[in-house]
Image (cartoon, rainbow, N blue to C red):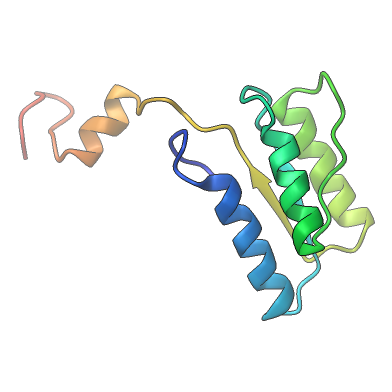
Amino acid sequence: MMVGLQGSGKTTTTAKLARRMTQRDKRKVLMASLDIYRPAAMEQLAVLGRDLDIPTLPIVAGQKPAQIAKRAIEAGKLGGYDVVLLDTAGRTTLDERRNDERGGRDQNHGQSA
């Protein structure tokens, strides 16, 4: 599962990882986009999949990310895939607690550690 901030390259990295696993590791890989919020995100992964000859989960309009993930995992099992890569929607900001953890701040007092 690829997670990170919006615009950090998750979709491109998903395709690069899939290509590496397919070519070098000889794994059967399925890619699926869970990003229902960014226009054309699912299509971007589908185009990358076509360009690299790596299967992507077919797009079904109206599905929620959890439904897509469940469908991808099931398709992976039924299709004999070794790896299912899930490309998630990026977050626009880090939540305060996570931001405090990354910044070395004490969560209880808000002071630097």
